[in-house]
Image (cartoon, rainbow, N blue to C red):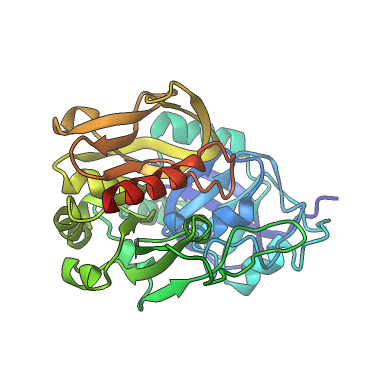
Length: 381
């Protein structure tokens, strides 16, 4: 059964396009870059992914909320989105793991949701015109005033959102990937020859940390602003560069640190970490028209010839032509031929644009965590 809120709302895009809606969750206005995600499931993981900070996410799958929300399928401590847009919100959920409805979860964390939106028309508009800032209004319906306000909303380009989502203090990570009947078990420190990984938190997803821990690695998470010397004082066997939100080109403090780490310790970057590593090595990034967000993007691993279906969430990409000669493209997006991965020809460093931890999404690319572990072993020999 689909229940709809009776609270009227408007979505106003920067170009003046208006969509009528009804609100659920926390009944308050919001602003952010309006984007879309093509995943059929995993809305809880999407909501809590820090890479979505500052964004209002539109789900292309029409019925959202049917399995509710639970306490385990989260990628951070709270929802990170500026808002959620769906075609049909399902208030009465059904799932043995659920503890809350989606609406209750959004209300608890003060996130507004919109339902009864013509999401097919909205997504088509964003594909044709590009992802753009927009606002949600529940109490002001003066279109002239709202359109003027939306017109002056800031672009995602030039925004450093990493500092809003990174951890404030360093910590160790012990949680392993979820298993049916066991949930998230904890690392047992009985195994020998563990590798110590320092993870730079630009907006880390927890399932990335779980997969690193699952490779028999001791993981220390540090804030994004941590400099080269503090990282090296931790004596890492490898450094992981995480996903995160915003424009990679303005995260200059991280780019500077990573440039010093190259050649000193094995590096593995995902998403924003991929872009920051590229920038640290002399490449350039640019904003995609509407980004890649969803769990069904085909990527070819050029080293094996295999095509993997991947989970993605990014609005910026690395310029293929800007890659210096000592970098080799390893993965290619088969939809638009954008760079999805590269490696350094001389130093132990590689990165991918997509999310191999697959939360939500397919598990095709979990092998990359094993590849990182093997790189560390070879470097330490």
